[in-house]
Image 1 (cartoon, helix red, strand yellow):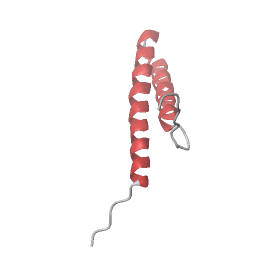
Image 2: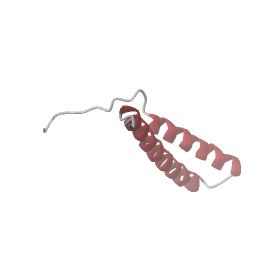
Image 3: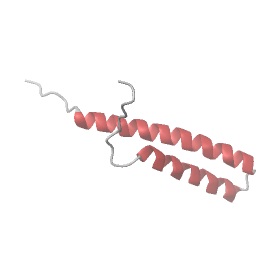
Image 4: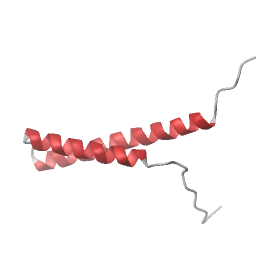
Length: 74
C-alpha cells in the first residue's frame, strides 16, 4: 500500500553504531601511521560501509532466527 511507512522493530541501530566505530578506528589508525588524508578518508568510508552492512545483515538475521525457532522433531 502506498504511503504506509513500516519501521523495523530493533532496539538499536547496530549497523550504524558499528559503522561509525569502524570509521573512527580507520581514521585514528591512519593518523597514527601518517597516511595521506585522502587515503584515510577512503579507508574510513570503505570500513564503515563494509562493517555497517555486515553488522546490519547479522542483526536482521539474528532477529529473524529468534522469531522463527526450529521445529521440534518427533
